[in-house]
Image (tube, rainbow, N blue to C red):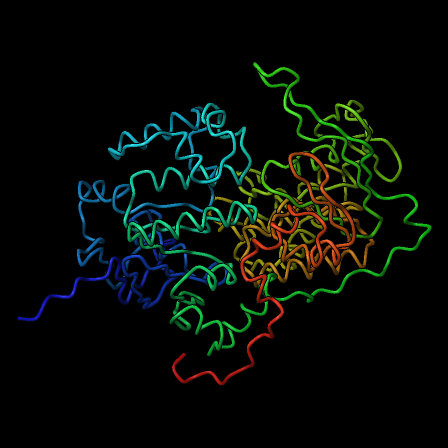
Length: 549
């Protein structure tokens, strides 16, 4: 008698999904098929809007209310999921199938501590374990202290780790992860991915990874499914697909990966010595201490930090989550006051207590926030959000502001039909593009970029980076880039400052810091970048596209 072959952990066959808008269904995903075997990692990759998150939402039965499954099946261990009743779904979610969403800020209760929310997850799923142990497992420093905090007190990277801790609490068999590491610095990303690899090896955890990071997919996934406009462009073993892609679309995605392409974007001309004498941004011996109940002396976020960003250059600040990168950005923007030292903009000390001076400074300095969802007013459609800075500074007429807003939205790659859509109906990548367009509206002299491309797929990321470099060359703007993506830093930065626990580890030209770091900590950051070791390999040559793709 022949033994029955166990069905795959997850099977998706011929899935076709659309969204009902004004009585008509707009198809988003068409005839998508793939499997996730036990213990395997399968990556869904493609541009923003390619249908990746729609597939994930359908698998989890968490699609939007207007989502319509027009055809196809989704099976978990051979059992259909699309027709499963509420009780059956509740038994699977959290215990058998877990989910890591793209936007952690909207997945946690803002009025409850991290510890209480994780405790509830452990109780609901009937899991054994302690909150502190879970937080430590995903690389959160001082886990007992973090458990007592509220979500707004944590960085985006730490929130993402909290969500991951909640997802793995019950030891699920299938983890659906929608951009789970996009907000993490490279060393924590490596630790989290190592944890998932151990879970796959020891527990047979299957991973469905939705990502735009092809370097990560090549390094960590067994199989790859490439989506374009909701259709499978090609699929197969990750190494084979990325070594010899059959479609022009996949080759374009691969060529846009920062970690695999060292030198793509031109940099501005070198700064003249006379201009360099007075930097656009300078921090002189800056220390920032935050008061903390029960802690003598408070928390020292920055410790005598000194840096200079030359006019017309890009100065990158890199380091792990919690190293003080965002604190520097807030000081430069006048949102915080230094405990000691000075912050100078074009040689003039910034005084956060002078409202008139701050308003003048903010006309010249703009921010691209790490989390676009919380940076945009949920009531304003995209075009109005972009025009808002012009309105607040009394620039132009209503018609000219609207025209400028739509021009900027086109520049960042958003089509006409998104211009009158509120943030809640845009994807994470689309929201980030709106935020970038909004920051560019005033053509600022200084642009503070706080993880500006963390939510973008590689093709849009490449277009945004090309755009900001072009604007820098045309306008002579100065960029202060806060990023954990060293591939992006290598492509666009002139100077790099490396922070660790609020202290400058080393600082200097980007080409030297990222190629031949002097400090062990910097070396560890560089070596943690997925695909870095193979980044000098040439992009696979063009190949004919087989018929039918």
